[in-house]
Image (cartoon, rainbow, N blue to C red; front, side):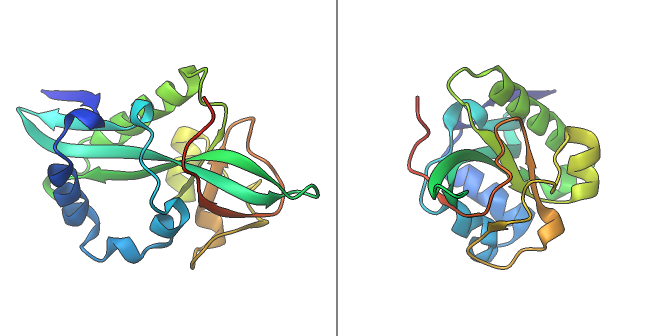
Length: 173
């Protein structure tokens, strides 16, 4: 039976091994890693899927900022959702969907996380299932290549302004 639990309760080396298996050892070169930089994941929004003591999935959420946001040139805090990693032999078992549902529910229920959510992913899936769209991200810049249609966001606090996505050290409490 799969149990979802806080990711902080899992050995970080096991999480890294799962991420390598799910995305490859070259994953650190991806744009998403550049966007979140050296920030630490947001613990209340990051979860692990464990089956009979074995880590089979994880989701991490990260504090990021949209800098130079709008005419005032300010910054807007956002939460970057992902990666959603599932052990290759367990993909298509609904584990990733359960992890996303748990992370999004935690974000929606949090009084401390007032930021909009964003991710880089498949718009057909994340739009249909979780309500993410590219409607407000067209003017966002990222520190690496990205297919514009895959830069997605959701939430009332997502700004429809120009700006550069990058890491944030912490979200306001």
